[in-house]
View 1: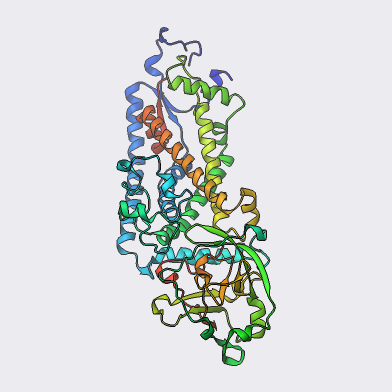
View 2: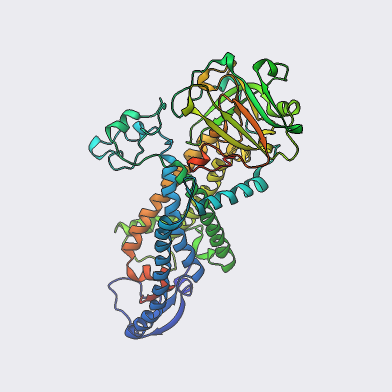
Length: 266
Length: 257
């Protein structure tokens, strides 16, 4: 490379005495710095106005909520396929996940457990006991439970595929969502509820788990029946389910109400 | 310009007073993209920290273990307080009690900003790369075969160990390597970020990156690299002076060489 050639990289606009060039540069600068000032002002002002005036919707700023809603549409159209499965791991890699009950672990009488079902085909409701679930086919999977906080644990789960459950307890036509609630008796503060798309529940890896790492679920991990959806953050993997409702309206969700994304899909 | 006059100390040719030139340096698109990227990246790093603090890629007691208490990250509010997450046996709750800094648990806020501004970061980056490609500006930016040797000379020159003037050009070879690396880092942020964002839908990408937690680590370390670039960049811009800095705003530079 010779110098003459690399000098020709210079896109010379004007050549002249120092003072003349400097004066011309100042004229050019004024315009650009005006733009720079306006853009900075707009940015800082926008941020201040956003913090002060943007409405809040369930613990999150409305414009951010709109972005999340947009992201949900993009996620469903661009990413989500029921054939996209969460990676399965060897059974030997399974560990015990952290008990992330937000407050107190509810030690409930498992023999008294019942599952309320609403929104069934024909508009029926039903109450199930563990014995009612016995006849459904059993499935097992070893997947990574991913907490929204960032940690993850490979866990072996077994139980009933939701899709098998939904064949026996079919939803009313027009159902788009599923609401699952955990209402442990004597633990009103531990009421927990999640909302999911019906499609996410019919995913082949959506499991109503009864066993973890080869043993029956303990109360710490959601006995006697919990949801396992490896294609969702842990917040949707509700423990100790006491009612399931098929709905056509988007159900609310515990962490959604605390400012988190409703969809939480992975 | 006379190419023979390169040795310092030699007589300057008499043409000097008229040799001052007004030179067009940075195209308008690149200037906007550069200055949009700056605040967007700041928002990404800030919101990324709020996410990181919910569960640091390195356990906090290890992360801060070499730092004496009085300048500990906790004291500066640069590390999280976990007292708001009860029942978290594996968390350094004792640390939180020692330094009760009101950082709080702002994971939702962090995620909401992060997944909104990721769009601006990605779109701006894609626009920048497309502009580089179609305008031909990439010619000034990509390293060349000789860049790796030449960049070493630039470093020596900066350290005042190499006294000969550097060959003229829009960007020196160290800049070529640095600016190209930063594009690769930015692309790496998007790729590792997408893997963490949709690890089931993009399971193949997660596998390629070595797993979910590894992808989180890579995302973290790329951020550290970007920060390192940022500080060196600021120092170099400060050193290069006003004329050089102004060119990134106005697009023009006064050249007297």
